[in-house]
Image (cartoon, rainbow over all chains, first blue to last red; front, side, top):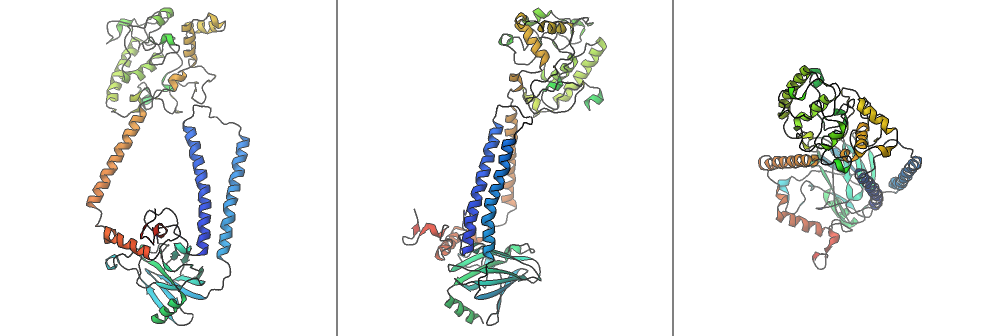
Length: 227
Length: 291
């Protein structure tokens, strides 16, 4: 989850998110370089004693500042596309979980072996236990086995929603009448929080997602207990 | 608008630019409020001296409100010869008041009949009343203040388009020269070593409206700007304070120190963000933050 005075992205729990973190560092560095160059040039413009402002011939610098941005853009696009295709690799998931967005909660279906369905509502602030996170805790968490590839099928029963878990690098729209698929693999156990990411009405800010990643044996125990 | 009313346009809506002066008839050797061109005129340039005006009809004493009958710098009078004009500025009438100056510049440019003069007096008085009501904060009050030039045309239309980025236009500032000025231009065609310093300055003033030093002079505008900025900071602060007291609801229980401590303990227990984030800064063996 996010912590106070956080400056960047949350730590990666999946391998894709690690890749995205590195890509973000790379792109942000380019952005910082360009911004500081522009700021420096602006400060030069504002403090110059030179006064000739009419159009002058500037073929060389025009060539440079056409070619160089094109190169920079290519340097951004190539890693980006690489990660994009990496996300879509064939990976043979061990488990399929379906999640449906509603106004204003998520429901989950584990139907590979038995029929396990439950709803996941946010816990109101007055009912939180001491130390819990406001607007992030839910009554029924999504328990999943860690270090296993899981297919998530995401859709909606009413309006658009979006199922997002930042530390796994996941965000997929829940569109009524459509089934979207994403792949989940967490390398660490723990609780991972996310929030609905598509405006869906008055309680759009109050339908979070909590994944509880546990070892496989714990998952089996849990799913048995839920049936 | 002002033109429509028949009032002389003082150009008060923006700081003095060259367009406030009609360059058609320029007073040779006059440099009112300007930085001197050449050091030796320094003491004299603040006192404008009227020039010999050939064929002027109005004797100096006929102006209503003129003081002591001295030649006033703001109206065309029978003045002194050029040679004396430069050297005799000391002790002359002080500069015209700020509100009156812009009008008077305009009126400089044409010789006036007595009825025209009294009309002008009326307009000047009326206009100064308007000006006194203009209040603080107008940029010309900080003058000298230079600012961006406008492309607005002012009567009389001029061909003088000098700017900071185009400082030496072909068209001179004073296009229509009187006889004396024409004589000077003829003299300019000869050897320049024959020109006196005063004549060189006069030629400069014919050609250009302002020197570089005048053009680049600082102003006090920044004080007004910063004052307004801080004023609005303070006003915003007032609004925010009022909001906090009268509008915002009670803070949720999760923002109390006790809850925040328990929350932090929970996050550390579940090792949230253990790679580079929060839990990575906690030393689990020593049970304290890493140094």
